[in-house]
Amino acid sequence: MKNKLYIILIGLFCTLWSCNDYEDVPVEKHTLEYVFSTTDSLGVDAKRYLNNIYSALRYGHNAIDGDYLDAASDDAVTSVNSENQIYQLQIGRYSPFVRLADMGWANYYRGIRWSNTFINNIDVVPFMQTYDNHIGTKMPLNRALKAEARFFKAFYYFELVKRYGGVPLVGDIPYELGEPMEFPRNTFDECIEYIVNELDNIKDSLRSVPIANAGADGHVVTSGAAMALKTRVLLYAASPLFNESPIKAGNPYVGYEKYDPARWKRAADAAENFIKDWGPGGNYGGYALMSDFRDVFLNYYGPSTNEVIFHVQGGNDKTDVEVNNGPLGFSSEAKGNGRTSPTQDLVDAFPMKDGKQIGQSTKYVYSEQTMYDNRDPRLNYTVLHNGSQWLSSMLATYIGGRSNPSGVTEATTKTSYYLRKFMGKYEDQEKYTGILRNWVLFRYAEILLNYAEAQNEYDLATSKTTADAKVINYIREIRKRAGIDGDDETYGIANNTTCVEMRELIRNERRIEMAFEEQRFWDIRRWKIAEDIFSRPLKGLALVMRTGNVQIEHINVLDAKFDPKRYLYPIPYSEVNKNSNMVQNPGW
Image 1 (tube, helix red, strand yellow):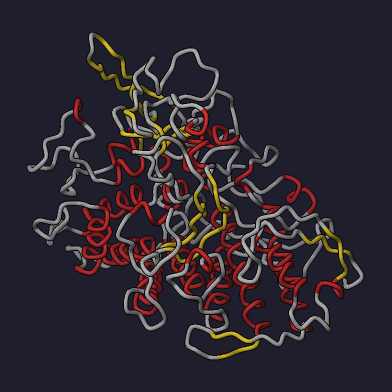
Image 2 (cartoon, rainbow, N blue to C red; image 1 turned 30 degrees about the vertical axis):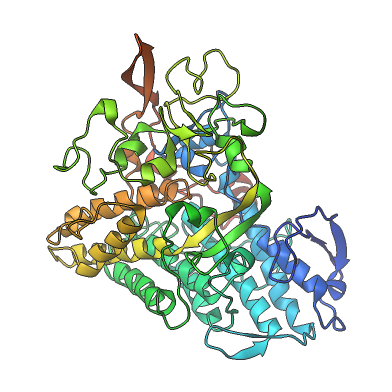
């Protein structure tokens, strides 16, 4: 193995030691003896190899053929007119033979192979450097770097598992692509246990970095990142898709054959432990909700930037989100290409400003003509609509309006809406200016949502009637930060809310809080509700200006029936064809 050549992709994703220069570095080929040198006390090339492992992470902004993954959910549709990959993903136009960008089989196994190579060779590098772990123990740097590689191995296995169910666990040998391998699929249960055990085992070996310096260090794997991943893994494992016979009883490669409520308790405990150890005033740090929802995606420096747990670096001086998704009607340095059209379904999910759903509020009266008034502030932080303030002007998204021109060949809104989330605060600016742009993989709000969901589902399974007070309070914390009215300190959630009611509240809160963060696409699958959601067409608005007034028409923008086999992706035909032990997912 050591005589083979390994391709080292350098510089796309920096670690703690590589500066934020983002230069294009040529691909190089080196032997393992060169990369993992016994005479390099600084480990320069070994660290570059670790960058290579980081590079298998996806920078999620407009990552799927120019669109967000959640434009293949019920939250949005792509604005482009051609049948691109996100459209194919949304309507199910893929198969074991027709592969789409999100399917990731080769990419994630490549990341696992790189991780194995690193794990098997890093110990020969004579690092002189040491580091402090999260409990203040000083250790040799090799240990932290190996733990980072093990984190990515666990992370990439999870990315495979949530797409395919149980997958082959290939062990610690860095097999090359094309080598003859006849690995059978491990069960989903075996994969989850492997991932969780790896995360638990590396927790005390990872470095501790200043939580308040996420801009410089938030892309480095820490103990907090490992435990955040653990909460997500266990939440998925407890969810209906994997915690009951999801498609066909007796198929060990998909999920479990009977419902196990203890899995919800295990997920809740993992999230509660995170809050206790890494939450505000915790034993090892102080992750917390930032005061401004928008700053989670814009502000990475300073003492109050402690919500982001782990992110993928995008670069300084970036306007990619604004250029790709900004509304039409502007030019030059204010030009946007309007790639993403949020649905009316998403808009309707945002409650009124007192936290009550549309039609339930006695404080704020809902009217279709003023539907954006007195709503949850996150609506205007997530979606741009007709009348929105943007670039020192008011958007006109009615048909033929400045923001929805007729007869253009470029993408324009299909729903009367444009994406607002992730963009800078350009309401009163004249043009887009570059900002530091990252892709947030884990943040503290998700931990609160993970705990709330898992604990409430466990309470439901154990016949509890009234929602747990801690569950209610965590959702209230998120709503309070969002700007929901708190005059009565309930933030729209009564103390006597039932567990059944709380389930819907939590699911909706997750939808609006985490919109376009690659959560909704997977949530409707793990909850097994995609069939119901796509049994009805996705909705938008057609706004028509008549005699100075905007007339509203509700329209269908996409009819995408959901076949139950699509809860899991198909294994690539090439893998099934060359491996007699590889079992295809049901229905494919």
